[in-house]
Length: 569
Image (cartoon, rainbow, N blue to C red; front, top):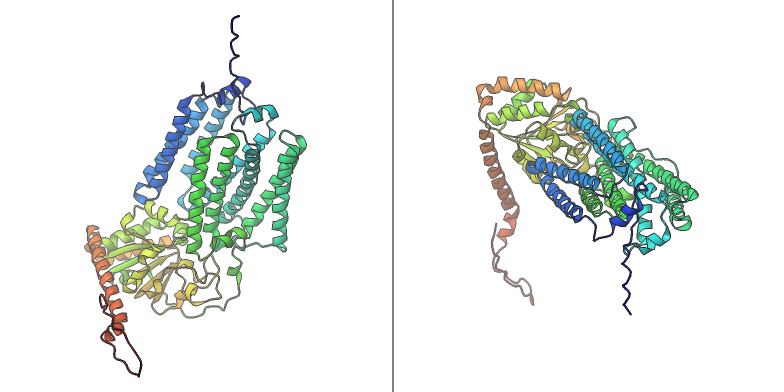
């Protein structure tokens, strides 16, 4: 007889995150013979653009291009997904409307938010990232898919998908509520101090265990698609959200930069779990980039504040800052803007230390004018940036870049700390905790052990502040009462503008010179600083060079060995 033909092989359908799609599209999504390979290629291109964007953002000179690469990569990812069959039916319209609303909101924020409000914006964006992962998890749980369809898919793993849903919901909820509280603290709506309730550890344990148990029971005990299971998942969401509020409200103001980094890490990993939920490779890659970079930055910020990352993650934020300390007393030397201009005009090497007070007063442009006047007169002018200056990492760098301060004169703490002994004048604008000697001299203070800019070692310091009050950490600053320090009190922007006027009067035509003279002066200063360092080391090691030679035994039975050094300083 005639042999019978084998029935055609049935393609396996994989469930997707939207109940709007038809059964045909479900079959399409993982029928690889019909799958649009161009979307996978596009995702690879987007991932490459994200990598190039991160590389560009690592340097101030290429940051603008890096930002553009990131915009292009995200636009291609969203546009490509929208045009593919991952979106179908009236999902096209819903996605398009959501995209238009998002673009409009983002454009409005970018235009209206000032640089001083940038930390609050970062906190809000972290909150939105957590909310997106949270809603994705809830949507996945509401989706009703038969067990046969799930098990038929070759890449289905109920254990991985279940735990990804739980992690996405819980981490997304913590990130959302915690970021909103951080945003309120940064904006001043909420008290910026550490708000630590009684039995805090017990509350933390109850919220953590309760949210985990409710989420696990909903996912593995009852199963997706159940109304009661959805109720339990919402309970888990509320409990984890309460943990986020408790977590961030216990943060002292001095630790806020670390918290921003930690929340950024949480938003990134929430995106990773959302990618695992919907089997989206690009979402996995993008979330991994954000989470890993945030984790690295968290570690850097902790090191800059002398805090271990474990302490930050466990809690205990800002509790040490509230320790009782002996009040710092003394008589501060107060000067006028004209006096400060005289000190700056007679100096050859000047270091400017910006702080959050400069951001509040929006004085970055006036500071840039001071720099240009001094560089035009042939002075060496550099900027010293503490890693946690401001309310988020890189806050001061962004403000100085906005004022068109050259990148080559902006130095990090580790790069410039050794140059203060040979610096004539250090001008401090709105910085307090980051230049506080108590970090090295007062073991009981809340910032003890924190690496700071050692400005007090300079020949003269000028501190520009509104008052002699303590900084964000609540620790008094003994620098204000040092003999080589002068206080220029008042609004930073108005004082800087008066300082610019006085400088131009004192420098005259000399202050209008080419800024390249300032570059030449900076190079000469760096060379002299290097020579100073060598001379200092030679003085310290001079005693060692005196004992070099052939040793002679002093006692019976003693045997000494002659050593020939490679060099003697």
